[in-house]
Length: 132
Image (cartoon, rainbow, N blue to C red; front, side, top):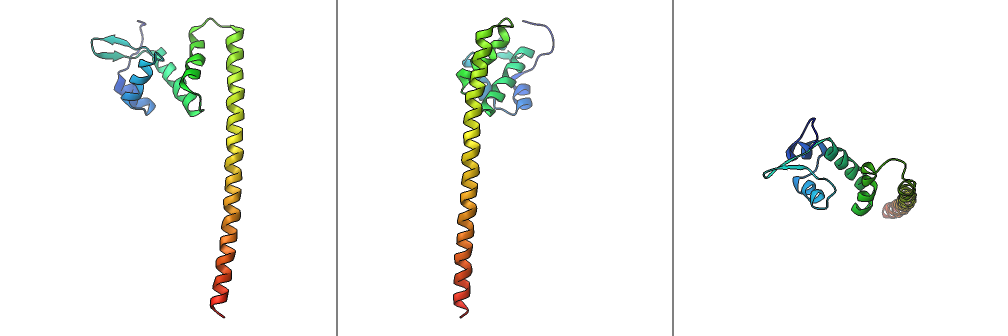
């Protein structure tokens, strides 16, 4: 493997705030490939970089197969037009989805606000009627 700093699964899990199980799952899927020394996993800078990209992709809502395609770009020679166009297309799809979700949440908040105002008005009317 490469020289340089290495990390254990516990160190990587703590640093990124994920479980050992999640890391092993990403390994099973071939998204990260730590060095093995017997039963111990040794993580190198490449593994940390890929795990960071996996977690960022998950935060953005990308499925793991899309994340795989995107992070594999790091292993491909630079300038592969088709791959970069693919990633840009996926970003557009994800952005559109997130923008729609944001609009849906904003609409739901507005509806809740209106419902709250109506409930408060009804409660206020009931309170006025009970004092008469």
